[in-house]
Length: 189
Image (cartoon, rainbow, N blue to C red; front, side):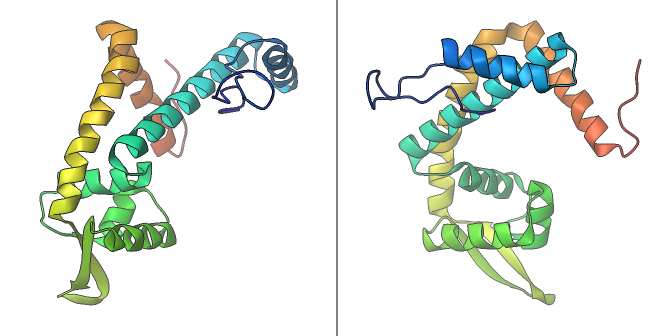
C-alpha cells in the first residue's frame, strides 16, 4: 500500500499530482478490501493506518534529509549512540538495540564513518568486536535533526491528536509491541 497515491509534484501530463483522491484510489481501495479476509471495517481501518504510516514516514524522511543531510537510518544510529550512557558502544549491542541485521549495520556504519558522523575502533577486551562512538560532527547534526523530527511530530501528531488521543496511541502501540514480543500472541480482555 504505502505511497501509492502520494505522487507529489504538480498536476497535468507528466506532473504526477496524485494526492489520494479520485477514481484510481477508489478502485484500488475496493480491490484491496475485496481481496482481504478481514471484516470491511477492519480492512478499512488497517488501510488507513498503513497509508498514514507510510505518508508520515516519507514526509519525515524527506524533511530530515533536506534539512540535515541525514537519512532515517543515520538518525536512528546517531540517536542510539547519543542516548547510550557509555562513550562507545559495541557494534553488536547497537545492532540488537536497533533490531538490524549485521550486514545492514556494518554498511551503515561504514558510510557514516566516511562522512565523519561516527568512529569505529577495535574492542580492547575482544579482538573480534568493534566499538562505535558518535563524533562531534555527528552530535552537531543530530541536534539539528532532533529539532526537525520534534517539529514534525509536534505538527502532524501531537497537534492533530491532542493529549487524550496521543495517550491512546501510546497505549495501542504498547499493546501491539507487547504482542509482537510475546510468542504466544496477544491476550484478549
